[in-house]
Length: 327
Image (tube, rainbow, N blue to C red; front, top):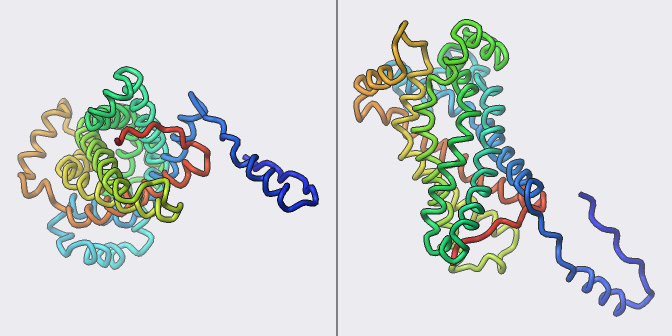
């Protein structure tokens, strides 16, 4: 939105300064309803799609380690070298299309939904009660938002994993999506819905709660309204990094199972539940955390970036009307 034109000069510096001060004192219109939440959603979509898209190479290596640990057993750096040597550098961008598209939609629903459900909880409980029990509000709001976001993400994530696990399967997002739909039906896209919810919902709950608590602790020492835009971005990055590390550990077993269940289609008549039980037995506790170092690096950095980008785009879009629950 274009900024308002500067008032014409009166010829007196003092009068000009008084006019500019009065103009600056006029409150910015408060955004509400669809207009507000659409801006939250756009900021979240950009934050998630940019960060996940940028880290596609790390995700490719992480997925290869999870799917074939016997072959990719040299850690993250060694995994990069193996992929480049055997398939070329271009293989590191396998699945970029579904990654960017999937997390654009998921980010919109996750961040926009979080702000929406947080406000609904405040309306239901009252600001004082919601503030007193804010951890529960953060947990409930993030869980609901992530559930709906996963419905949109699941088909694109299934396509991404199929492309990464078998680069010859199809040529990009549209080809992979169409082939799965034609050969296996729409149900194949949601074979991993249980694992993706099991992975993403606890991940998002930890992500938002740890972020909110970390930011709250920092702002208690350095009040938000005294910090510059740059300093607030550093706070978002720092709190986001801590949130990402915690969320990565909590969701790692489900992430490994999700990669496994989307690698190949199930046997005729085999239910998703039976497949998950079989995969869980094969992996064991130790196997469930295969690829954790790569994922700590990936999730820590992308979560820090998400909150930094989200905060910046919220400000640029004029969506600064979210209610703060921290005392």
